[in-house]
Image 1 (cartoon, each protein chain N blue to C red):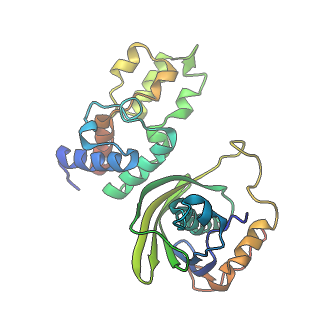
Image 2 (cartoon, rainbow over the protein chains, first blue to last red):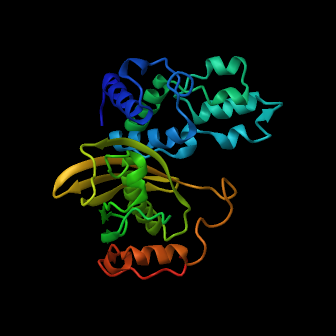
Length: 129
Length: 168
């Protein structure tokens, strides 16, 4: 299956507009799902369902919410993700831009990390796999 | 108040779809209270009726093991009010059901004319969250489903009638 990045963005944008009730001009590549678009935890399930339908893919839940890493004392110390934890996150989520998070990897900030572009990157890895 | 917003199941195919009837009657208190002087069934209760059909569809698919709750209403469009004397025909189709939730699409028709269409998303309560244990007392859900004539029409994927589960 081949899809251009524009086609992927358009479908991701449509999914987010429907799931979050936002306007198309709000769904920019750099917008964060939680902070900018107001996604709540239940919305992620909705977004996942819509992306699976739109692209005909299956999205394992741990792909987008690595709670097993973020709640594991092996990878988190004093509320900060350790170097080992960062490596684990990067391996799990190679499509996400973790550079900003890495500078101050507070677990509590992870929820507001994902951007629209990250979602497009993720879908891109799934449909080219 | 009875919290049953479908009068009767008319069709139920496991994991696929469910249909039901809702009669709108002037003696229902909610019609008086919602918009005094212009009685009509509150749209939220039309959503609730379709959510009951959909929730049962989802719960049955998972053999009644999940604690199914309506998590989110996507789009909900209403084209005209449901007035006393109207009979609404609901149909809910299960679009996707997975281990952590399900999505369904519902329509309401009156005399063959589309009255409303909605998107529903169901989630499953995890153990220890919001409430412990089952959402219904033993036997209560079975009683409710009997009252709504579900088992008179319900069939499995093989077309054979669905039996009343011991889990209900």
